[in-house]
Amino acid sequence: MPRILHIETSGKSCSVAISKADSLTDFDTISEDKSHARHLTLMIQRLLHHNELASEDLDAVAVSAGPGSYTGLRIGISVAKAICYASPLPLITVPSMEIMLEHLFTSYNKTSDFDLFVPMIDARRMEVYQTSYTSDGKRIADVSPLILDANAYRDQLEKHKMLFFGNGAEKAQKVITHPHAFFIPDVMPDATYMISGALHCYHHKNFEDVAYYEPFYLKAFQATTPKKLLF
Image 1 (cartoon, rainbow, N blue to C red):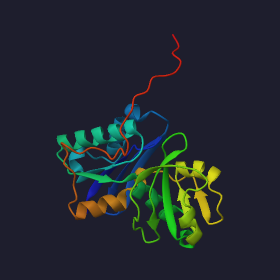
Image 2: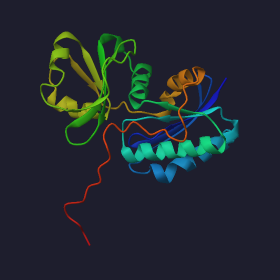
Image 3: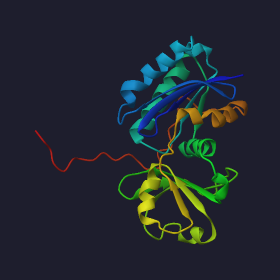
Image 4: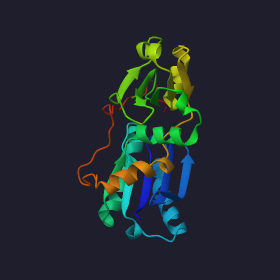
């Protein structure tokens, strides 16, 4: 019965969880933008202490793989790698979109009413990161960036009832008005919904190279200069 530490930092919230086998043991979440670097290691320490565990008592560390916040992903991966190096432990990664899908299927009723499920992560302006899944959890499209407009998904919506979810769905709802389109904005990646994906990887020994693994950023990081500088 593997005991796994789960770390999710791809979005605004920072969350950690501990599982044993397929059951959630404990978790902690902070919904504070740009706070991951300040809180993550303290959250992990508190969670381990509260459950009378040391990192050596774990069997693996799982971390969200992206896409999502560039900075958040870097922080999560760096902390996960540090724990794996020190203990040592195998590193598991779970895609952010799969975590969101697990959240949806676990927490929301009537998902059987829809044919296709589209997780969306806000990528600023009218752009989102997105992909598509069938009702049995099979991914049928590459994860990719998309600029939203009134014609987005028009062909699919003519044939299928589609559920868009995630913080990017709030933007999609403003421009996609087809009657087959439905929206749930408040579904985001969370460490408590990583257990199934991480356990599957653990049993199949699908581990990452701790030295060389990089998150799935989807787009290269670009530093920008503010238009107005205040002195």
